[in-house]
Length: 464
Image 1 (cartoon, rainbow, N blue to C red):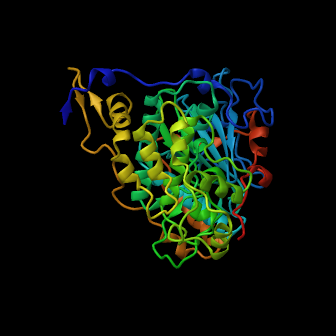
Image 2 (image 1 turned 90 degrees about the vertical axis):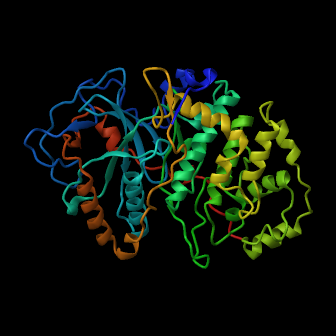
Image 3 (image 1 turned 135 degrees about the horizontal axis):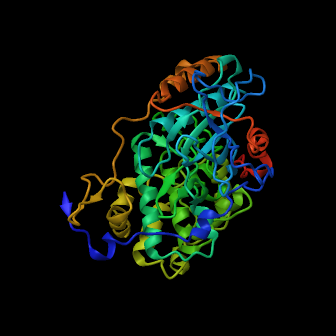
């Protein structure tokens, strides 16, 4: 479809201040291992010619022959940029083309059947994703022999910032910024939900942003395929507390993709307010803040809550709705914005708007137009200046994500062998394989970098 884009959108690119993009990411100063690194000693190295499949470093495995020293820009040393409950992320240089990429290290993968399956699931998802607004794997380092296989290294695209850093910064966010960010979040979520995937940890820190405001959903450590059987229990140890849906806070044993929509609603309010919408010290207080805004829910709205949570709620003095307070979040909280925000923040998940319906809301129209006029890769401008638009602005997955393999793996060893085989099948034979460079000045810091301590993670669900 050929359309000449409106003049106020078609040639105007979006950006955020580069000062937000060039600062140290989370954990960048921890360990102190990269300062003064020699420009020829990067963490990643190309495998030596004729060496065969490279082994990445493992302390208990046989040491591989030293690789040739890769070149590295001294102004961009390899450094940690983030860490969480399950992995550590470093910004490194791909020695094959000099491109800056993200290297995710998943340590101690095979400690239990549950954790090993979780990592395998995340790895399969990263290789499955093919969408502009969802982070995917660019490469995986070839593991050592299965006997020494304990860690996984995944290479993804490196984006300069995330939505959390942008929200807490002094950077001005126009209504156009908010609309285009919200559109991309919903666009990526539609892709995930049509693949039957629940992210279960949507938050600003898991929404990566580059200097042109292109956004990608990342961190699938808590993601899983939706559970069609409502009688099967699902874990409540999901979603960072500030973005946790009320049905999970109230002990629901089963939940749906609506939990991700609630998280998006919290982020939408945070973009308008420039502060966390529901910032509590405990899950019970989190629920109190929600009811202060939405009012005391009816028994029908609490139908998925456990009995203890219902009893707690009914003992409290009834609270009226304070939805009108949403208009005071900022001058950008227009009627259309508040209407969509209220639809996302419905207490009852069955009444909460779906991602598909949210994308059809009038508030999203300008975000869609701006994104496809100058930011996306699915549309393009011809030599004559005509904008050629795609026929599908928000593509769904062709096939849902398959998780049947999980039922066939009943031991840690079976998961280990299946994952080892899977990684081998993903290797790109047209490119030189990569390995970890133990000679790197940053290697000691990289090898010792670990996941977040439990005290640094958000509070667990309340035991009603």
